[in-house]
Image (cartoon, rainbow, N blue to C red; front, side, top):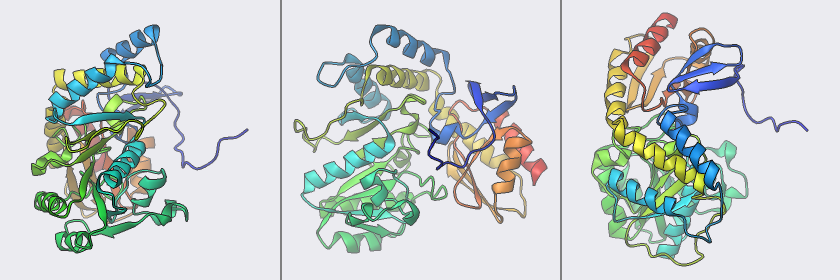
Length: 373
């Protein structure tokens, strides 16, 4: 049997990692400024993280959600304290896409309505409902397309209001910062308007913080830059530093109904050990503040060039937009300079570095980029 060939692979085979460093099977050393799609939050193989998983695996690795799991309650308490959402409830699942699926379902249950507003250039996942609210026709199958979804333009409050006024919208889903769409930041003013509009029209405001959350933007959640409180917040990616885990936080207006949500693997012992360790490390090492400071520093030292159109983002979620196709630049960064980066479209290099990235790492990247361009 062969693997189903759906990924475009670089000719690199990582075999070891530590912090922001990755080594391949040939012994080459790389600086990781992509963190495997924003997943590596506290750094590869952090000793406290490894110890937590190791010790938990020696005790019990899995049992279903039909039994009491104190590690889940520990995560709920810690997450409430660190994020500022202690009055919300936590539901645990396995990924960002699953989190968005559950959020969309809860919005529909809560309102009794069946239409969702999403935004152009959005990305919310590859499962059925998540694909339906993703603005990428290439991954939307005819089955996915049956969902009732309306796409609006980012920062177009009037357009959103016109759709909400029709009275059939269950919820509005928006990324704290659009990742795959090109590191597009909704304005703080628009986010406040969106909050007010959803409240006025009885729609659920869902903040997809799968990629932009967990400290990446220099706030625990990117929407906190605007000072708003969504009805549902979805998480994934960096929540467990590589161990599959996702979650949604629901405002006190949502009442739990037995059997309405469920998952086999969500909130399992190993995932909870990993997630609790991640939160401890984020707090102890002040990684949210580090993401803010290092990200601002990195942005400030990127050289002026006729090739670079714009640098945008917050914290360690950055996009460098070029006036050209970035594929050759990204390849050269990887193969010549040994630096992992990502892309968002054909002309944007996307950086989603671990929150422990240092200013020295930032200089290494910028010097390499300057030499190439």
